[in-house]
Length: 372
Image 1 (cartoon, rainbow, N blue to C red):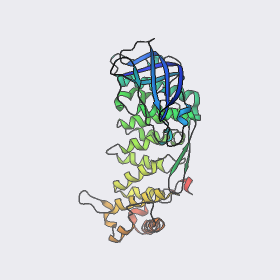
Image 2 (cartoon, rainbow, N blue to C red):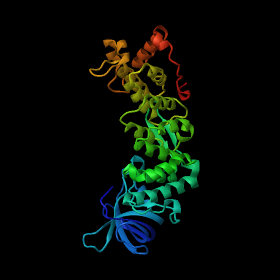
Image 3 (cartoon, rainbow, N blue to C red):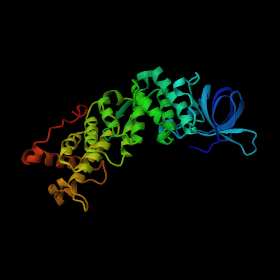
Image 4 (cartoon, rainbow, N blue to C red):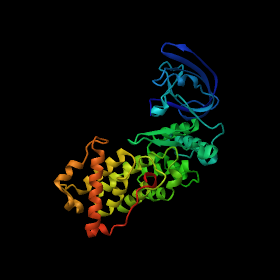
């Protein structure tokens, strides 16, 4: 979190802006509703001023002025006479314009999100953000979902509404806390009937090491895949040091399901490759048929990791390793040999699937419907 000594929820009034060197100067008055950190009392009126600059994508940030109720991080000036707003970002490439405030619902906190004795500052702030996320999810429903478009290389473009990106900014701020401070929130969201909240809840529980969340993801994958924060789930899984085999299988079944969850194929392929187990081969072979070059390259690397001998540990599939395979283990992908590399491993699987008894008995896994 940026340097600050005060956090407030405030109503904004008397907003004005004027040209300044390198950008614009914005002035406003904050009427404090709730203080999360610091000594300001409810009802206090605080004048604030901040400077906004043009962005690499144009001046779109200049057209955004605060209104209504919002969350502010403030730093008291050295002279003690004023409070300076602190930027809440950055929030990623899609949110290049600067943000010094986060819009919140106009209502007071509901009883479910009221502070509890002994709450840390982060826990209090998590409750505020949770209240805002739940209000957005209830009011917008599936309107928060994004449209994802993959290029053949695997590059991803994401399209959504203003509320979608507000939801994302709010989650991004929540993600700056220690996960333990937000555990009650993650548990509440995981139990929600609203998919956008369930995604946040499951990703949060995974950050806390709750491996059982992977099975819940598999069960609800179709509803969760289009949610705005779906990318956080594979990132959270990547943070887990070890996964039991049943969790790897559940993850792999979800990765080849339809619709696609961004990042989940990469996450599954890494775990499958590291497993070194014969049961992993049908899933890797299925993802080798992906329409995305990047995924095909990752599938080739998964084959290599399963077969290549290592100096420590038993690798059951190392008996299949042939030094000539090294030529088909790409270090960089996509590359100029993508088709050749994919065909090599495709041919290897087809041949050995028929001739090696321990592989012939493995249950088949179809390529994802989206790739057929």
